[in-house]
Image: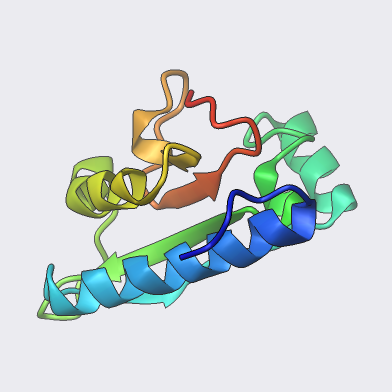
Length: 123
């Protein structure tokens, strides 16, 4: 198992490892499929999203510590509700106290968002 990260690169490596575990869990345990969404967000994009009110300028996507996943059911139907992601979200949080699931966000739930906080604080 990994040691407690000290540097951003260590956080990113552990985040990537947990993303791999989550994706395997989605396919094997939940019997769903998924595709990858945004994993890295340039500063300019983050600023534009913040100005449009659809994101924040300090998004963890900028640090490569956030990933959006898109889930599909057995018929290939894209799952859009936060509730559709709840089991994956609970599994994600069980991997580390530093992992956050966007479905728990109070102001704007974001069910397909999975991230890692450097300070371990959950929203």
